[in-house]
Length: 323
Ligand SMILES: [Fe+2]
Ligand SMILES: [Fe+2]
Image (cartoon, rainbow, N blue to C red):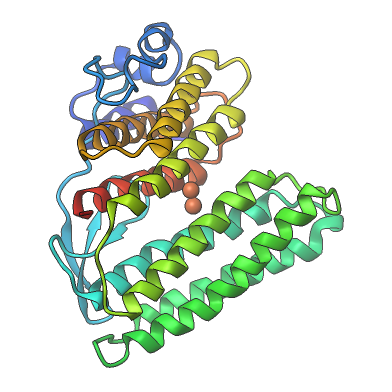
């Protein structure tokens, strides 16, 4: 847990000056006003001009760096860098490195969450499988960082990633079926297995596309995919908050409804999606800081709060690139 003083300092870095009063507001202590403006049709509605509920978070410019001998970029603001391709890049090698660093980390965390939610001797076997995937993805990312990729060898590396990914997708599918049918009684919701499997299959499709030399993002794919993920994140948050956190639960449910609409009817302009993703980034940062500071009552692990925030920032980056 970090102190309120250092919390304010870290929030100031990414979101501008934050007073103790507004900090308490974002931490759910006095969120009554937020409930009013957070209802469908107001603050989180598509294209709505309502005042923001949570302090605005600037995700900042992309910082250039080199990984695997290739120029890539990162977006910060959290515990881990968010890897993206350099702005304007259409190089499938740079996108392969950035996407593998980003999604590889997410895949590793998925199985880390599963292992946390599979306690006791009865679940030793599926937990052991999760821990094995965690080690495999960690070793794979180390291999990537230590290699030098270019046009001649990136397809081979992506193919090795795909092999690993196929095993993980099969595991997530099997776990979902076991949990749904009560053959397994872990603390992982079937929807969480499905959600993380969808992210893995999307990563697989992306690598397959990159292997064909095409690095573009199509907004007809980007918006529905990420809107569905943002909707589910909001539902996860809603269900992991302490039942007494009614104001934040209301805000989470409202965000879920917003993204449900966005997914069902992707619009022609980028603006409604961009406004919605900025709102959910603001919400997730406020929630993450409140959880870290012990000001929000929940069973949300700080690593999960940061995981879903990174995915929202990644959505924003892909949306800006999408055509
Ligand atoms: Fe994820
Ligand atoms: Fe996710």
